[in-house]
Image (cartoon, rainbow, N blue to C red):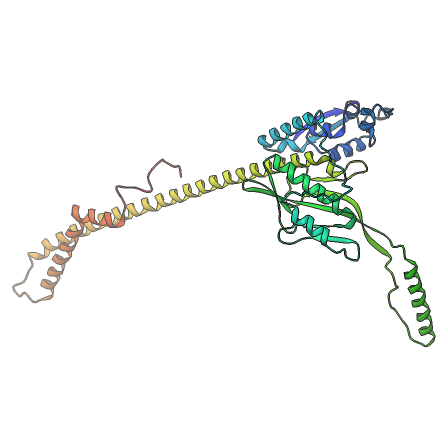
Length: 412
């Protein structure tokens, strides 16, 4: 994570020279983080709509800069999260910024809320559009399109056509970038090769004070009258009132979000604002999704590289261990045959000594022991001859012609 140090004055001049989103990209942080940094260091920033008014030639007011009284906040340190991104992803983000600059001078690709239902909907979201249009709103006026072949939406009835328009354009613009949008039942999925990200379109809901209808007020009045009558009769009624205190209301504020992945330094959500609408930043959304997929690819490839290194290290350790074990078996083999040779020499010397003592009688114990010694010597001779040793070595595969434990030397 790299650091960049600025003075308050430099930051002030920077944020009033161009939109904060552009400055945030250059500094490698999010625009939200940049605004928080400016607020912390008391650096005034342009209000919403400032740059649109200035571009349109309308009068704008720049807030004056004020020096810090104690000078304690003269320096601002920016820690760029994006500096930790893989080089390939940094280059991708740079290319996206250049692409965005080029778009500013080209035709307007924004879309507006459709006054009439969109007729030709992209095939990737056609089933979802049909399901939303045919669904019956629940008690809160919400319709859903979830399940096999659908994009996993749950929105207010008033937002149906707008949502369909956003999904249609999103699918088409992803297609232009060689990416495909598929319905995943509870959300959407965008894939590039074996890398995929889950995308959700949601509508903000707020809890608002319930405004009762005349009918609900009449029902509540009747309920209270009945409760008072029951109280006089000694019957206590603790039932709920006829209408809720609050309602969950869909606000019409939509947002697109990469919902199943998190990668530090990359934007993953795009929301409606006071002026901005999701449908007007779809090119940025597509670029952001493409950047996320590039980051996921880089992370996957890095994990695969580490996995290969781990497997190689695992094989290396296993090879070292196998060589050590074989060396031990070779030493044991030599030690055994040295012991056999020594035992054979001792038995031969013993046989020579006692042979001169052989009694005339052939059936005594000494004669039988001499026969046993000669039998053992014959067994030893069969083992310690070159043929016998070679045969034992082949059986134990201690010096094979094709050595699977051979190859490059590896330090223990």
